[in-house]
Amino acid sequence: MAARAGVSLATASRVLNDSDRKVGQEHRERVLRAAQELDYRTDLSAQAMARGMAPVLALLVSSIDDPYFSAIAEGVAQSAHAHGVIVTIAITARESEWELASLRLIRGQRPRAILVSGSRVLDSPHNDALLAELRGFTDSGGRAIFLSQPVGGLGAVRPANESGARELGAAIANLGYHKAAVITGSESLLTVAERTEGLRQGLASLGGRITMVESDTFDRLGGYRSMRRLIESGRIADADVLCAGNDFMAVGAMTALRDSGIEPGRDIAVTGFNDIATAADVTPQLTTVRFPLAEIGRRAADLALDGSAPPTEDISVPGEVILRASCPRRTG
Image 1 (cartoon, rainbow, N blue to C red):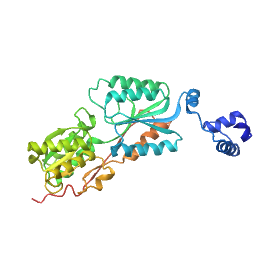
Image 2: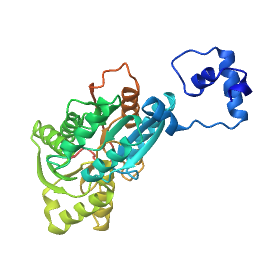
Image 3: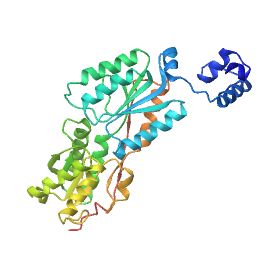
Image 4: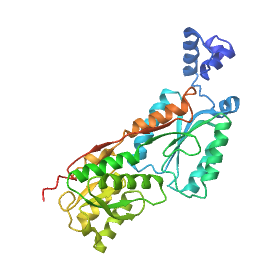
């Protein structure tokens, strides 16, 4: 390689390994041209051994079929590309045991940084072990950032769940809705607790209240099942608005409503959370709280990959209430 480019081995190494030491533009172009002609590929394993870490950003997500995590991953990938690293993704299925096992495997790859998304879990038996793994990683020179509630003083970039839900509760109460049925994920998820409490506060500010809470998996199927139980038990009659813990659950709930002859937006209002891409495509269009999910992913990756940024910074990103046809103003 160096001989083909007509440079020293040290110069070729600096160019190919993106060293901080400067190389003249002419020599850089000669090395890159020689690499292309010889179809050279950097050995990431060797690079990790030499540097102590590989040019890799690891992202732990709960699911890849949930548009929430897909949007975040898009932003992470944009940042990683700009920083010259690749992204590896581990699926944790919202199981703290899987999350811990994935983290331990990922550390063996010696990534430059690790992003942990998905709500933190209250009273998980794996919380201490997870934190110990992340602290061990940061103590060895890596950087770890949460895309959810921060733990143990590590940095985070996260949606402002409670304030966003509080604004949503006040907005729908102002439209005339005062009895909310909530369908959401497990009560052990901090995201669920934040959004439910914010909604309760927002409704109460204008005389509204939560009349029932039904929990299931934090996805479309969980929304469908929760809604079916409320319908079959007759409890849904005590609500004038259905508030789903996220948009994915709201979409499943609207299907369950229609299957029972109840028209969303006419017979009962429906709200979601996050403003995933399909929220504006369903019928009726879904009232929700919009978060810049790709931007959250990008900012988290930037924080993780920028060695000059404080690794313990906690950034809470505000949301915006988006009122749509699923929640029309009440006239009666």
